[in-house]
Length: 542
Image 1 (tube, rainbow, N blue to C red):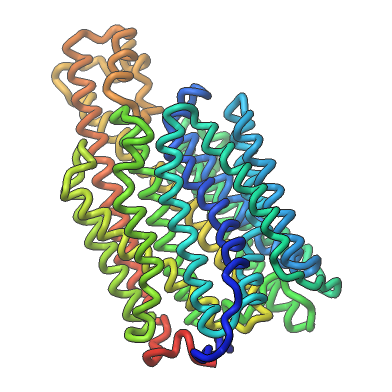
Image 2 (cartoon, rainbow, N blue to C red; image 1 turned 135 degrees about the vertical axis):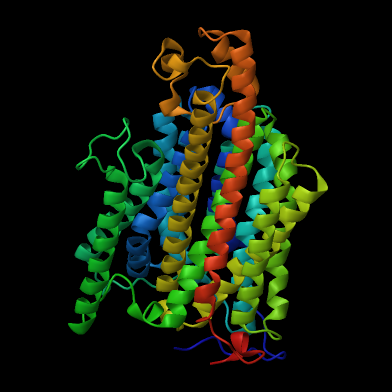
């Protein structure tokens, strides 16, 4: 393995304009994903759908990226990174146009799937373009800025979308069309990347990788509706009463294993693999990937659950969501930039352990202090603590992957990063949605059926059918009252049901934060395999 060579202070530094264009490409994707949860209340009203549909949109986007990013990496090598960068940006512009004009939920979801496939072509070109334009210390700085671009896009999305969504949520995606056009204009300043028509596409590898990722993502996304183990009524089928969701996940893992077996076979035959095994064939790389998967999954869960609670449960505006999330997003952004200053003083292993420790402490703290008011100081402290660990880890782990691979494998590193982050985002969002709804449903069902204010025949009576406890979801107190008033429930039962719902929602959210703290705690294990470089080695070893 080789890493970037040192850049002497007297060496000439290249223009940062190409990096600006590359960062704008990263921001285009990140802004889109961050805008979805902030636009949740507007989408729910426009499409008359459940809030978890927004989670499905995020999953479909992530599915498109992670399922086809390995193919995108090889196509960018075959036709040139610059050209493929421009094509991918064009696809995202079309997807944003569909978002603006989408009349139904199905069109909106299709738009996000298209955006995901466009991002699948864009992500691997970013690292290649950085390698084409920069070297040494400046290249390491560029990698840091790429990680920061993701964070700043999240900050801008929460601010801008929070404001424009009060007018119309579609305006946020209209802005991304303008952003896409600006990228295409400025992309002419990028260096031309020579196509390599000798690169062969491993069709079998593409099918195996895409199928594995689709099965895993689809399985996790349907845990909420189909059941974690036993099949629920909404499941399309069942195998001896077992939900198809875990079956899809297991089959996906088996197919993923078959992909790596097939890839090793191609390498043994001196054929071009879909993914260069050098980027994943050591404990160090696997530890980095696992740690990256864990922290991105935690981030996705927080970015989904907090807006869900603020907009749907509390019925507050998108701007209120932006204000509540701002401490977290700003902390992630500044930490992602400033963490580079610690690379010459501490090893990646030490930084990662401390960062995951912050995430553990922050999520446990949030589980105990979370209340209906997200602006209180204890909650802000918790979000900032998690943000410190989040920002440090995303930039650090990406830098470890990039600096551990030679320049010619930059596209493979970019695709590996993209698969990891987007699959983690899909799984994190889907599991958090399933966990919150599952805990909420269990608590509501238990408290209602055991409550003396409801008759003993409640479980089988008309009121139970009207409440439909098999499909409990997040809903504000006001909307719940309106729905219950149209049933045969008495005024006393309505008030009691609203109280139970409010308590159960908060307990579900607290449970979610505790689960996230457990994930972060487990992530300390792969951190033991991260490199323990000498001071200064991360940016200077060759």
